[in-house]
Structures are given as structure tokens and as C-alpha cells.
Picture 1 (tube, rainbow, N blue to C red):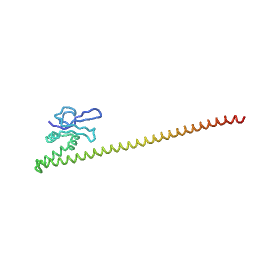
Picture 2 (picture 1 turned 90 degrees about the vertical axis):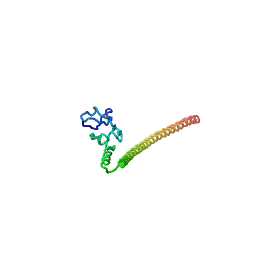
Picture 3 (picture 1 turned 180 degrees about the vertical axis):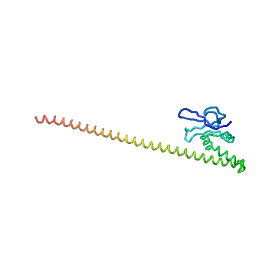
Picture 4 (picture 1 turned 45 degrees about the vertical axis):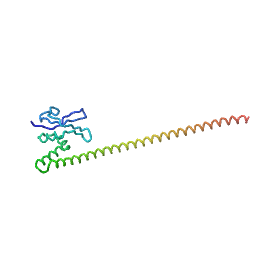
Amino acid sequence: MATKIRLQRGGHKGYAFYRIVIADARAPRDGRFTEKIGTYNPNTNPATVDLNFDRALYWVEVGAQPTDTVRNILKNEGVYLMKHLRGGVKKGAFDEAAAQSKFDAWKSAKEKGFDAIRENEAKAKKEAAAKELDAEKKVNEAIAKKLADKKAAEAAAKAEAEVTATEEEAQAEAPAEEAPAEA
């Protein structure tokens, strides 16, 4: 029986979610499988992989053939590196402790890279939010200035109307006082 390590699709339309499974090569993609060894969510940034490392390593060493996507996932998780290091231990190139230390060094370097990516994304989001806030403040200041100018113009017009009204009242009273004096 030829075994494959493949993805089994789940999730809903437009939001794919995959299980990483061991299946017979003749079984359909979403059909019967032997063992589930992990999950893969491509919708997050970076893609989230939850993998049972020991079982994946076992199946790769036994000879299960992964699909292209699963091979990339396994490489990124270090399964193939560990297989390579175990081969070196079997040949006597180095001991188990040296192999494990090399793998741990590789894994920590990879985690540092992911952490740097996450920090850069968070920093970019903060900067974008700050720029958006500044732009919104400028728009609000412009609106407030227009409103203040409009209110000032209305107040000036009102004051001018009051001055005009008082002048008219003063003129209306003045001719009334002058008229009896002429007669």
C-alpha cells in the first residue's frame, strides 16, 4: 500500500482549512485516511501550522510521499532537517545530542525571524493607525475652522444688523423731535 501525506480540505467557501493526513494514495482527497497528524490554516499571516512532529517524522522515515504543499510545510517545520540529521547520526557523523542542538539552533533562528515579521507588522499597523488619526484630526480642525468662520460671519452680520436697527431708530426719533420745532 502506497501511503501519501496530503491535505484534507475543511472550512467553508472562501475560508479553507486543511487537515494534514496520512492516506492511501488511491483514496480521494477528502476521503478515508489512516491518521491525522496536524492542521494547516492558510488564512492567517503567516500561515498557522499545528503538526504532530514525531508522527510526521515517523511517516516520512517510513517512506510516505508528501504532496508538494505538504512537503513545503514539513520543510518549514523542520521535519526534513531532522530526518537528515538522524541520517547523519546513523552514519556516525555526529551524535544524537549534536543533532538535537543543531535542530534547536535552526528552530530558534526560525522563531526569531517569525517574531521579527510579527513585530514589523504590528509596528506598521500602529503607524498606519497614527497616520489615519492625524489625517482625521486635520479634517476635524478644518471643519471646526469653517464652522468658527461661519459663526463669526453670522455674529458680524447680526451685530451689523443691530447697529443698523439702532441707527434707524435713532433717525426715526430725530425727525420726530425736529418736526414740532419747525412748525
